[in-house]
Length: 237
Ligand code: PGA
Image (cartoon, rainbow, N blue to C red; front, side, top):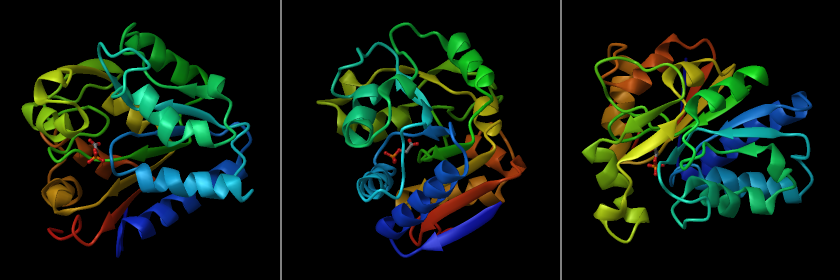
């Protein structure tokens, strides 16, 4: 595990985008795992810039997203499919047929898991982290759930994500998410985190025991993982 501390979110975005550029250039048909939420937005902005400047060609890239709310239509303003289109896919030369976001209507978790296996797994997985330590939507629990599955969101996650909805009641209570095993089978992982509200989870994930109560702690067992943090997120290390 490597922990890298940067001065701000923009610098993290440039560092993360450079890692993507390297992996995408290295392998035709590279499979990237993508994340939603506020944290990846600057990285996506940087990827768009690098695509426009001709540094990254996405034409052969295949993507799989971590998760999606259950019950939201694909074009719902808060769906993660729509988020990905608006924040990244609509602005780069990726073939939309090669982009995959779990289907929160069909909820075909086993199919999504199999598809990722069949394609040979994810080469580079981007992760954020919840203030409760979730990765994807794998919430603190009594045991790790390994394959893509349907998860019940914690009150903390519902509170954190209410800002994207008109009100808290509109936040779906369940989601479909790559499991802990799906994430851990990625060949390389980068986790990005910014802000004081992530500091406790980051410290527990990096220095605490590996335990399902802190899902991100499983990353201690991964062979090729980098944490890209700002000073606030790193402040309790
Ligand atoms: P955030 O979400 O980037 O909006 O803080 C991160 C996450 O829940 O994984």
